[in-house]
Length: 324
Image (cartoon, rainbow, N blue to C red; front, side, top):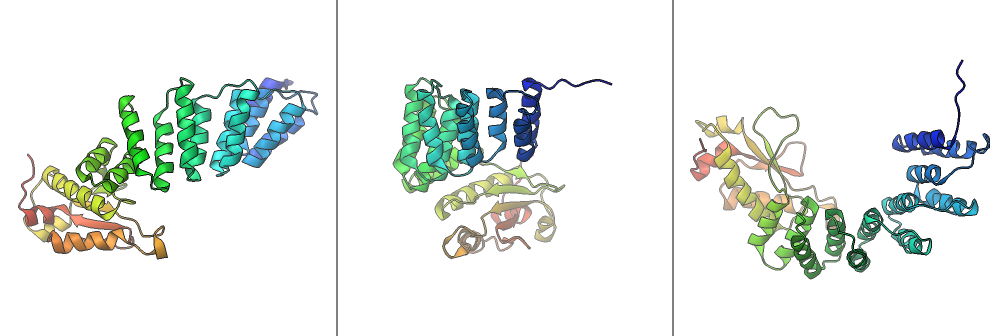
């Protein structure tokens, strides 16, 4: 028989494994049982446990560390701040962030990003911008996560000018917008009446077609969810022209075309709209059918948050020839 040796290193590894498996009760049990083996939990053990638990327990573990004369490390603070961010407890996250320097722990990029994201979830745009400015003053390079969270916080408060300033700051630092930053920036540009630039920003951030999951046909999907009608209309028109030109194989008639290629527009079901009623979908469908002559456009059966446009019918209606 082999006798396994239990030490702080093996306990920390076991707690980390429990954390990755989201088994927080087992993580705490291991931490508590270390005393049975006369082992003193170190900062690594506590950090792994903090990453596994919810924010209230994480805060208690930090208190336990200090009571046991174990100094919290950067990893411990980051795990606790991230836990607060996930729980929408931004005030506690900011308190932890503020206490780091008094504990001689310098915040890292993760510390700032988790704190900014916590403020974003609470629509605390002023705090988000303050943290972003502090991050830059400490010579830490903001990441796309930093900018995107601050932009979203500003968008929740309709602070369009601040969003455009953040977009300019990103460009100066050579940071490419991700989809969320692009969406928020496009909304700000749309509010400023700059529709063409808004569409350009959306495309920079990856507003493009993607294959429909599980489909062996030529179905393409474009997500317009959350965009205002004017912006969604512009994006849809541009997408339709591009898709119609790129899809190969001209169809002989509308019926045959409708069985093959299609463009799916995700427009949302209105669950987050006032009254819980769909707004974008019905208006965009009316534009497709009446203004653009695409009578074949329809709501996807069984999914009121999606519109379907047969691309073969589109080519015939607009007289477009596919690229060779």
